Image (cartoon, rainbow, N blue to C red; front, side):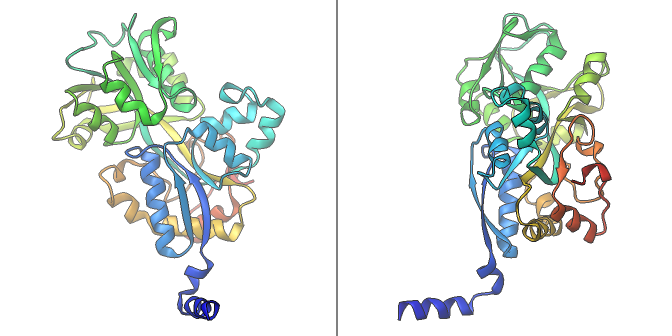
Length: 350
């Protein structure tokens, strides 16, 4: 009788609910751009009856990217520098080696892109940094223990001051869930973090005392090193009118300093990745739901308009790809973009 009732109940359910796939995903901590994108995507996919995402929060994306490449995880947000490093078996993937790293990287496919976070530099007003180009002897939080954010954080400090981590300043690293407590606990003099706009993390940090946030001064950004960093794997230019940037933090004790009318920095280019073997029709439906959910992504959070997400034509370089980063899109995703009337560059086709 119980089996018959269960069968009858299934028969009454919408077909989409019965056919819905269950996928595993990892993302960063709440308050971050990847977390907002992943949780919004999960809600959209659930509503569309396409898939149920079982999301693990607070992940180190270095590990998540490898897990997707190995087929142990279905989906993750990937700073595009990570597939680049994996393909060469260097940096956090040096233990894997170049040959195995290249094989693993070839298993990664992107379904859409975004560049919603930009590198900032901050400190507490109660303990100000008198000159951001002179950071000698300071303790600076510059990222999690490894990964793309740490690479970008170290790059910013070097651009500002010419100093390398451990050579002139002490870099402090903690896992993402411990970032706010590490900074508010008074153990560092300053911090540099890739942040979306507005950042819940920066608001939480400022709740413990007024802070000042800096962009990258124009002379440094336009320097030879600055241009190298902009063009580095996983980076893209970032520029927002400073009035909009300040408005995003209105009501919080956060001072924003720039040298002109825009907040300029380098963005962290992201791709939402899946394994190459994930079913093409499922990926098509996921991407189709993503494209149809544009309004929800843009309007469900104050940071929505600043996500720089790929809802239109995809040329590659604008998304941080088709240069040093040679990621490919999943065929199901390409088909969804093209069916929606958008073009996808040949360099992104497998």
